[in-house]
Image (cartoon, rainbow, N blue to C red; front, top):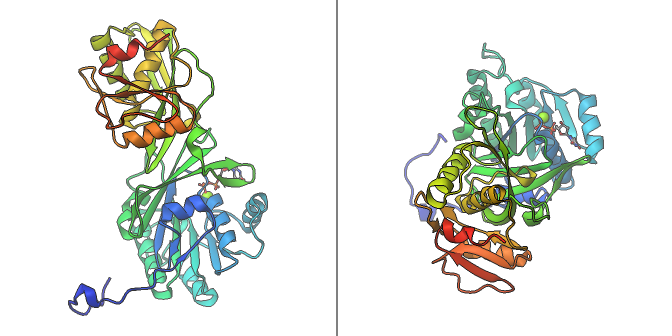
Length: 398
Ligand code: TYD
Ligand code: MG
């Protein structure tokens, strides 16, 4: 910011009142670091259709009872906004504006004096003084700096929606990440109802927090206890349950695998919800370190519920799911497995082992398979079975 007027001792800086506006949507407040900080700018990115407008409209509606909110849409008509509002139970008192010019928005902010301004979306807004088209890099940069100024001058918080497409992620909102205080990204498979809201930058809170939502017919609903949402509940061959960490939260997920005779010269490897290269590496470790061959088979793996399990702690679950599929065998009932697989076939501990193990027990898993040297001695209500390497782990099949 300009106007710094020389150096001062840190101790002499006045403590600003960091009162936060609470949206009442717990999962959103958590990701924001405990609510909205006055004068801050927040980017909410994600694929088109993932639920950005819906969530912000619901948050706006909740805020209305204690703060004026202005919702600006450059994408939808007023009747469209009203239709969504009606579906999601949004208050009719919400002020909406369909506008694409930033100066028009600035004038309206002057008049309405909102505590929270929502801009949906950055790709549709223009500074009329700049000649390039809406959504261009120049416009996005100009509009963002105008919005940042509006936030600082009026002390209002600005939420900026940005569509991020997989192809255009660099040219789009990614380039304004450094200009805003907080960056949140929505993740999730559009075909599944679950949505993760992740803080990737936050000047006012931790980036270790995630919020979990479910898209319902009446808008985005919070999932405050997500731990059991990503399990199928059955114990079939080719399935293994593990515990991943999403931020500070342990979440149980189920990995499923299926093998089929391949008709291709190069058998297919398809991984949904995890990195495809990691799957190939784990298949190589299975073959070389434990003699589990999948070379002439198509291998499909899937993480139930549309969540991503890129956590290394899920390695052993993927390997055992595949091995179970090869042998057509099951793991004992109520078994959860946690561990990273090294190239030597050794099973290694990952971060937050005790948290993960405790969560498995809390959720009724009585056999927890984990590497040695986790620091966890015994578990309440369950049995901790330590394994040194992949060969040891394969003996667990019944
Ligand atoms: P939206 O919030 O418009 O996404 P974004 O602003 O990120 O582009 O959400 C759009 C999708 O969500 C749309 O495909 C329909 C679905 N949806 C529901 O399933 N339930 C609802 O209550 C609403 C409003 C939308
Ligand atoms: Mg939208």
